[in-house]
Length: 35
Image (cartoon, rainbow, N blue to C red; front, side, top):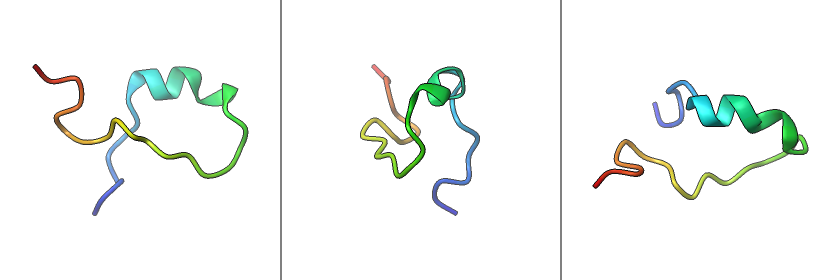
């Protein structure tokens, strides 16, 4: 199921700063920040 994985530590740390509502993760996927 898409979107079922746990949020990253970064998201968990900063999520409280985002107003409740829809959020678009434009850097999603298993290869994010891969080189």
